[in-house]
Length: 378
Image (cartoon, rainbow, N blue to C red; front, side, top):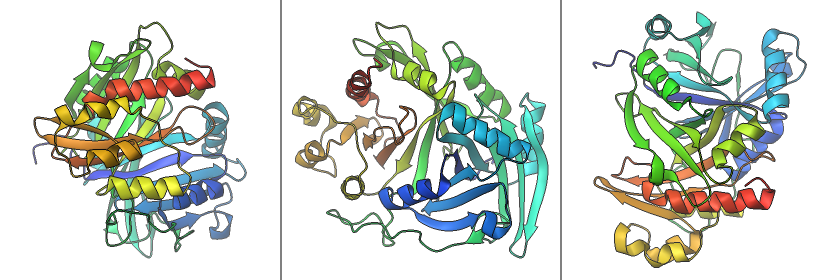
């Protein structure tokens, strides 16, 4: 109640992609998401095609250019050409767009869109937008007066593809969702600019610093990075920010910045209630996860202790575990989901812990380094 910049949560993750129809098919099939809305030539939108997929409160929007005719279409086309498929917008739901935008701009944010309203028979949505690192933006959304499928101009749609049947586990939810929400969104920025962007979120959005990882916390024999986490007061919106650090070889952050062509969103963490069932289902659907050597599990039980998932099953599925003073978490990371080694995903199941798997950093980064070496980019 005392936040100067109150938020309700993440509203949508918006991707600019080369082929939105194919991206929507992939995420409905491989991530178990459901198509809920569409906008394109058939609905009167002549420049772009957009597919809206949901899983619980997590909402992904995939947009591609049909024929660039305006500044927006040209930007999206150029973004895909320069960066490949990637996130262009981390949209945040707020109770008052006018107040949030005024506060942000008053504290130094660059406005990309002044507050405006979209209306249809379902009501009114209020939107505005501010710039953040790279070419990423935060659209501020108030949909409290709207009951449509996404935004005015979008047509509600049923499931694009029914997700494949589950294999094992008790099921993530009665509705069969594989994940329920976006847990956090990780951004990569250039060397020396992490603190600048941490300060940006502190100043412009009233976010506070939640965690900090530097030095040996987040290094291997070959590569290193530094990371700080900012979050709103309710901890519903969490943004870890990474920058590379000096090391013997190229870090995962260096690789990302090189292939993405600058700063941007590196990975999205998805909260699940049943990581075992979700991993089994996603693997069955063709999603590739990072491998973890068996040696990781030889001593895991000694410091993590008992978890909901037996150690043998963690070993079988290559799921990581970590414990802190508040509880424990289970997590696993996909390989990049496009040809460029840029955007990937994390699945996370929390049991009290609000951490980010600090005890797994070394194992995770070594797994990423093995993939970098295979690509010739270490």
